[in-house]
Image (tube, rainbow, N blue to C red):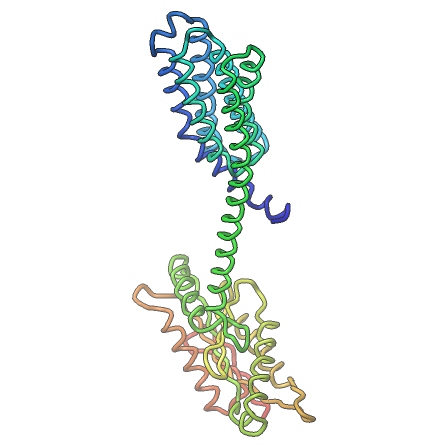
Length: 382
């Protein structure tokens, strides 16, 4: 994955890190209390116990408060919040590591040392998993927890076999951080790829494969949505149904391949006329096309339909040494939705207007007579 792709995932990664590490905040405090109150350790090392417990409790409380603040912030993934999060995690690891190192060189505290070694190993392993999305943070956290004790115990020659075991464990956690990070990113890339494929399939399921326009299914879904919105604001949506005149003659004379090419050319023409982002242009079936307009007056819809009809009558498709051409009949209907009506009523009105256009000689635009004011239909140029 390139830098740009990783930058896109940045908020997701930060959120994963926060979610993974949130549960561990409570365990720091619990472990500290277990260690210092076992075998009366705190009575022999009161100052250290207070310093250890207060510092860890403060950092955990700070991190918890920051998680809440960043969650409700308007910019939860800003650079400032990221710096605070990474810094607080690093400081937590360093505080624990330094206190762990001090406790491990204390004499005659075998019980506390054993508990601390076991719990620190557990926290290091948990941190490797929690901070796996950021390999640098995972490695830094693990080293901050382990290295101070390894260095100090080596200097004072305390339990060298344990030092070797701790060193091997630290190296192993570093290797696991790298491997886990690669697997995490691979899983994330696969997830993103699956999302893209799903989106592509969703788009393809709503696109007519021949013309590249929306299909009937998508049009019906959009009509339902726009009809509800129009009912709420009491504004009339408009439906325009277009039918290619004498399309069967093109198929019969030139073949179905020519017919398919003519449909594609017609679809391209529709896109040039109805080009607003809100315009829904779909293949209605066969040689019929349908358009849904919102925020348009009946007169605007009529003008667009007429522009389409005129350009269609002028369109020539070169095919095997000849020019293929025909005309188009169009029906237009616009209506303010009623509470008990559906968008099918609007389609029925547009279809009725289209039928009238074909009955009156084709190559004309007819507006549903219930639309007021209704522009005069254009005269046939046949």
